[in-house]
Amino acid sequence: MKSQGAGKGIRFSLLIGGALAAGFCLYLLVGRYPRAGLLNPFSLGQDEIAVRVLLSLRLPRALGAVLLGAVLGGSGAVFQTIFGNPLVDAGFLGVSQGAAFGAALALLAGASSFYAVAGLSFIFALAALWISLSLSKAFTFGGQVLRLLLAGLAVSAFFSALLGAVKYAADPLSQLPDIVFWTMGSLAPMSWQRLRFVLPPSLVSLIVLLLLRWRATLLSLDDSVSFSLGLRPETERALLAVAAAVGVATVTAVCGVVSWVGLVVPQVLRLRSGADGRSAIPLSMAGGALFVLVSDGIARVLFAGELPLGIVTSILGALSFALLLTRRKMELLR
Amino acid sequence: MIRLEAEAVSFSRSGRGELLSRISLSLGAGKSIAILGANGAGKTSLLSVLAGRLKPSGGKIWIEGAELSALSPREIARKLAFLPQIERLPFNYPVLDFVLLGRAPHIPALSLPGKNDYQAARKALAEVGIADLEDRGAATLSGGEFQLVRIARCLAQEAEILLLDEPTSLLDPAHAALVAEQLSSLAKHGKAILFTTHDIGLVHSVADWAVLLHQGSVLASGPTEHPFDLATLKKAFGAEFTLQSLPSAYSQKS
Image (tube, each protein chain N blue to C red):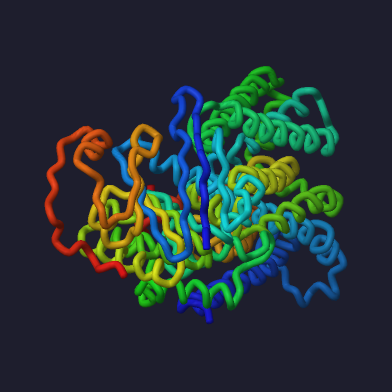
């Protein structure tokens, strides 16, 4: 027999799952073909172009949105749980900034291939992660959580500065717009081919996070407590952080920097699901996917020209966060 | 049956020298030992070493006959539950979920708690008399209630040895009495308990044996029926003491 809250938890999970399924279907129908608005699903039998738009453009993009949101939401929930800090986000440990620098460097070097940009972005995202982990070990004070937080802060600032230098050196007419657009994030480049590129590492990351979701809850306790419960806290926390960061590095390499999803989605869902990783992590994955689907839907249809996804997620995320702080008591216990 | 044994255990930390020096003790089933001493005497370090969290620089420790250094954290956690003095609560976990965390040593890394684990967690809550709190958020509890919840989490581990670091610190007398009662009851049911404290009432109502630490060494030890002499206490705490009879401290031990 589970606790009283379990029934409510199941209903809430079904609600999020239903909203995600409905959002996915709606996303496929929303767009600018044949005109701005909703595509009539019954017209698909007669409209060959509509079928092609749906299968070649909207479906991979919708799946990409789900993957991007699930990775950012899930990894945000994992980072917040294992560091016992609700203000940590998915780009923590310098991963997003490293990825942004890598992509900008590739664009500055004149790379025109998607794989060159995404590949260099992925390499620098992992490099940032590796530097953060190594730096945290080199610090001679504080516990692992504090050392990682400070190392992540320093590495993020370092790669932000390098990104600034690349922007400064970039040709303002030919290169700078591409770099700026990339750092604002977009699902526009998503295709079946690119989805195949991003899918394996993202799925591995998501599966590891799902399998270890209760261990994440145990790691939220003080290290002395989690050790007394049979864990090796430093090793297991590092393993979960790497698994989450690899997912973030992968989706960021393809879609650019998409902010606020990993911070705000776990915050909002935790209010209803509770903080236990068993529910908070899978729900944050589903909630992140829904948030990105909605944001990208808005980015696609609000104006004639497409808005960068990162702008929409930042506006919605910042508004939700402000609303959360003013309307509900946030779970910030220290 | 000897549950926990330490022989000439020392512990050093770079820059701070030797924090524990050749400490030996033996804890049997159904027995309880109180560790006393001034702040900085080495009480918490001793518990952390005995719990396997800190590696001793000398000596040996056995848990239920097995050498501590040869056991994995999971194996240690199945035999020994450790309650730190203070604990940060990162999120407002429901009490039942919080106590359920004590089942971790019995659950494989990739698995989730099952029906038996929920039963064990509920049993632990009932044992400390707070079964009615299972749906409450742990952050909404009083200090005394939260302390009982933490003890329940230790009990959910189903370990035979309990190491408790100042279990009644920060508690009012009523809650301290409740904790003392629970510890006495656990010892009666065969648990081996070792705790640190500054609470003389707790020592007399729960412990069979007391060990007085001074600058990382055992200054004196003996049964709790016979208090330490005044000169020893003065050396340990650096203050004058007078001997008075206590009012009945907490519950009576058996």
